[in-house]
Length: 468
Ligand code: 6PG
Image (spheres, rainbow, N blue to C red):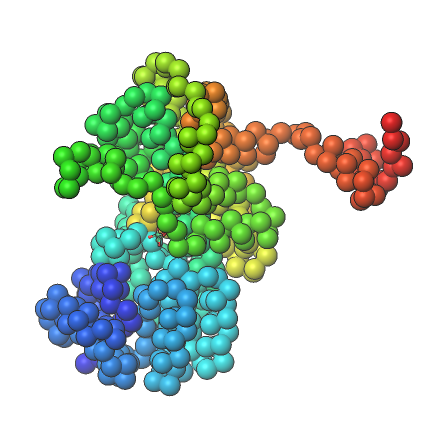
């Protein structure tokens, strides 16, 4: 009896995903060069008819039913190419390889075209939700051949997280659509992480909230409209005790954030597309600033910083809730805007309502707000920006005032709130009928004869500017 599903890479994500597949009634076979990992999976699986594994690629491939469905959960980059090369001679036409890692979308396009020549279907398929998600139900973002997806669909729909019974997976589009969507998911993830950390900074420095109060505040928020995975885990983080000292763990963690690149790629690609995603950009920059710890220490000694002025605690907490809600909306609006433009640019034919839908559970950016975003795009599939949806005007209008207060307080008191600030500026600029960029056009024409357009008549104009 052959196995339904294959997995290359039995690290924590691969092992958890395969056990999830097996829990859902499919049989699965794993492959990893490391015999320890092979043994660990067999031991954990228990029943060899349901889950088996081998370090040998041929034994692995021969054990799978055709068309073979082989998922790779290995680190993005050269390893993916190496695994593909080693599989090719063992596969048959029509077999399917699914890359479940955070591969760069152009790598996926290259691999898909290369494997197509060999008759093999390739899926770039983002998987979100971390180790627990892989085990209990991730959000899965597959892109590739629509026809071949039919073979993968029953397994993916069974293992994916469910939102009110609906699986958080759907076919997204051709080529690298899946990896692209996952990349932007991660860009939004970066910005939401930055925003939740800024609010913590403000509540701690200005409101003098203890970790216990922070825990209570975030927990309470998570029961309301801010309900989201990131707010939920942040509440947990504040109450975690440190095992090495008798303090709280959060206070002992070094304030230097690492990154594996997906947020940066989102920003870089948004720049190429010409779509502004400033809240994502600044989240990437803040990880970079955080990494300059030794320079920050020196600079801190050189400059004075205001002592935060007294503020009403309850009012601050209330304003922070609103500002966070407002800026979460701006993060999603920017990411969705990027997706809508990339869809046209790269021919992905993305359905933004479907994307918001599969983000409602399982993934890192899951949040109550995504149900509303899903509805907004279902009602208006051609929506250029979430801010243009009538269903969001009220939510934004009622919270922007608090965002202004919070940002103004941060600016006056030397507390850096760049994510919140950029969310607000993005909103103010995007909703301004007239911006001062007429002056930039005048300057360009002045020094370089770059020409300008006028507000009152058609055509291209150039002026011989008079020097004073
Ligand atoms: C997910 C996450 C995951 C990502 C981590 C780490 O959706 O489950 O996006 O895929 O690898 O969040 O990313 P950084 O190391 O870049 O923070």
